[in-house]
Amino acid sequence: MHLDVQALRNFYYRSTLGRAAQSVIRGEVERLWPDARRQTVAGFGFPAPLLRPYLGQAHRVVALMPAPQGVMAWPAGLPNVSVLCEETLWPLDTGAVDKLVLMHGLETCEQPSALLEEAWRVLAPGGRALFIVPSRGGLWARSDRTPFGYGRPYTMRQLEDQLARHAFVSERQVSTLYQPPSTRRFWRRTAPMWEALGMRFSMVLGGGVLMVEATKRVRGPGLREAVRKPLGVLNPRPEAKPV
Image 1 (tube, rainbow, N blue to C red):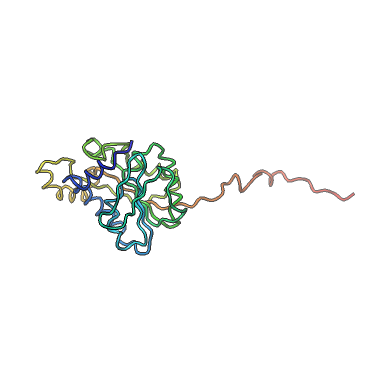
Image 2: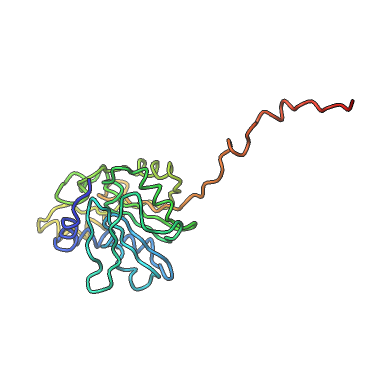
């Protein structure tokens, strides 16, 4: 079940907790993808908070928002680049996207397999996709006061296995958002400390969000199609003798 776009906008742009989450996650995206010059960058779900750094450098930026969620005009004060679309039918050409980010899209989608097939279709060979989902073991998935408390949370193994089944190759894994999902003043003031500790002791402290960067594995013809009769060489036909 997708959250309403109004609730997502209020969280990320009008709440202290949402702005903190936006800053941490966007910082990790920029660290993984520092350069997108002359590239097409797209996002699905509610990717607007993460795409802003690429507006001034990418060749094209597109924010795809699913119909059950709704769409908002974005970015404010600039020409609109957000598009309302079906979950599994995106208005993008095959192989047109160099960088693709999904946030609040996979875990809330009713057809995750079909969604991953569509993500695979639009990604260019050599392109990179970043899947951002709530962590099953994190505090953020246990609180319905944030968007990460909705949908299906994942473990890193579950996410990587699902991506592998749809021809994605996992390249890098990141766990982030270690600060508690609380609006109390103490936790807001100490949030940078928790993020620093989490990055240093990530094997002990569990982050609230998992991020997997993956590439597209180009699928070829199956063995069954390539070798119609694999036992033919073991049982050759007898050669015809001249009469």
